[in-house]
Amino acid sequence: MLLRLRWLQLRRAFPLPGIVLLALAVIFVLGLMHRAVLRDASFAAYIAGGTLFTVWGLHQRRPDLHFLHRHVPRARLALAMEYGALVLPVVLVLALAGAWSSALVLLAAGAVPWLPVVRSSGVRGSWLRRWIPVRLFEWRGLVQGTHPWGLLLWLSALVFCWLPVLPVFLVGVVAMLIAGAQEQCEPRSMLLATASDGRTFLRMKVLGSLRIMLIMIVPVLIGATLFRPEWWWIHGLIGVGMLVLVAYAVVLKYAHYQPNERLIANGANVSIAALFAILPGLNVVPLLMLPTEMPKARANLSAYFHDHAR
Image 1 (cartoon, rainbow, N blue to C red):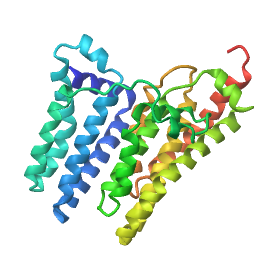
Image 2: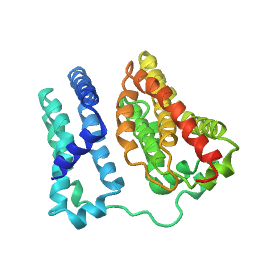
Image 3: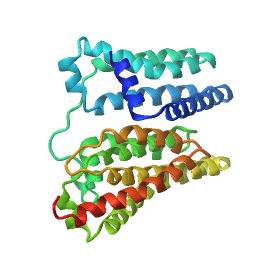
């Protein structure tokens, strides 16, 4: 049932060319995984662990979990099938590369729906929130919702800089969490209290987000490059891709901004941008997507700043 629903949502969100492009990107990523495992068998454990962590994080953060348990028959079994479909391509890649033990580990994804979901309560990470400007409320909300796991994720990327692939993957997960936090729209009063016009407001939001993102990714990428100097260009391209991803998520939010609404539909576009952002050479795709949304964001914000009837 859930798989059919996801397919309908995908068809509604993207035209056929977009679905084909997404499928080609997924095939390309799987091909890179297969090649990496063939060159170094130790990558298989990182791929399996990263995939499991991603599925667990998805289960912990999905907003429709309570709804599914109330209205979907055998909700946990349906979720297990959904997660199984997500990890199946990775299982096949690892199996074809001969990494059977890592492929079998991924079968644990079917048990994720039966794991307890951590519910956030109280004020979390208050010392971190003090370092974030008030106008970047999305970042403050992200700290509130993910602390201390988000901080541990970033520290793990920093600590394991000596390992191949893993630190870049972990900081990429952080970047996707940050992009996902841009879905929640603030009240219109917050817009008017932050800046005098839409252009200034958008510039403050984008530059503020990029400044914090730079502080997060630069130490990890420098550390990873010190241990793998021959990969400097890969780390550089991935770093640029993450910055573009965050900027695109911010601009996309205000291109479709509606006061006090959660822009769930933006998640599909951000997911595609994230997929391309972490692929060296293909991160030019979100860079091309960014200018198409910038005029829409400025026009939409201008309407909210100057239309007193709203």
